[in-house]
Length: 117
Image (cartoon, rainbow, N blue to C red):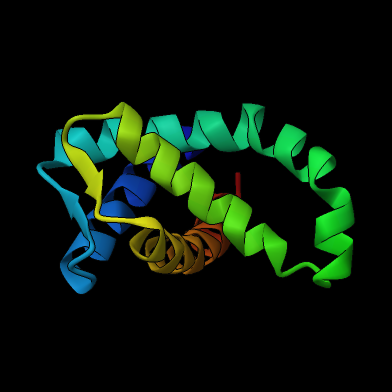
């Protein structure tokens, strides 16, 4: 139940990102659900490999390169899907920052909501 609630809230966060920032568009809630799933899969499967491969650059930039990796994951998900579009890398960077901030808030809320179980 916790996973489904988090997934729905992250899809709603994608809709919020598209509402707040014009560089990101999501056509419907169904497209947001699929995009949230693809983003989760990319962040679980591909992101750790990219972080490992770019470790020297990440160390030189004192961790700031992780923002670039997040933007690449966001942009990659948009390139794979039809109802989720990002206009460019700058839009992916800003969109991923907003989406990540929403994700932190959602994680805190879901943990507090389901902590009694």
